Length: 335
Image (tube, rainbow, N blue to C red; front, side):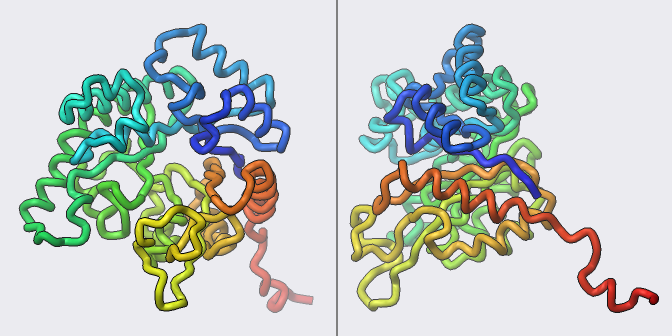
């Protein structure tokens, strides 16, 4: 099934949006998943018609479209506890302001509402991102976390995100949460619990990124089948495990990316342990026809080499069409 292949601009936000569009168009990408940071997209300008038209013009001039925008960074701050210097490094000044934690969370929620409004102005129907989590800090379950504390974390998520989703629904946009460590849904069962917490609202779905599942030993292909009605977007990103030497750990020991002592690393798509062919066949089986967004992360490879290489890999696998007839039909055909 032919699907558009896009480049997620989040890891390219150190470059001007014009330059990223020029590169992606030159490589042959169909479009961009535009990150709402750097100079790529300022969601506070959602009602500035000239600004929105200017973003569209840059895309069109480079032969690109957009189906999705991302605001992972503001979404992270909606539920997080604690709010600290890590958030100061990723949030715009208008969201961080004085850094008072609850104020940051409230302004981050407003930023996500504006993201829905910007998506609608751009004609985009899906926003990808993170939710944050007030209980990720309890993932090791020590000091012991009571069930009441965990339940309160899911309630906090629902209380903070339901008003955001109200705005998404008002403008006809969906939110695709990326299942990812540090979020309210980071594995299979927390995804089940998060969907329950918001009452399975249709405006809240999933951005399937298998790179975060492989190192947790979650089957990313089975995940597609079980959550098929909630797969609103796809990230193509890979992971390589290095857990066989008896020293490297799954939690990666606070080591930098590409350090050989890490238990796993993000790696250019097609070079890791994600079963991509099975994944693309499953995407076809469940009828996913949306974009395949290349999220390029590999500390051991130059991105100007990796990004065009990944495009060829993804396009080759994603264009397989199901057979029009069963392969064994000829066995019973009459002569």
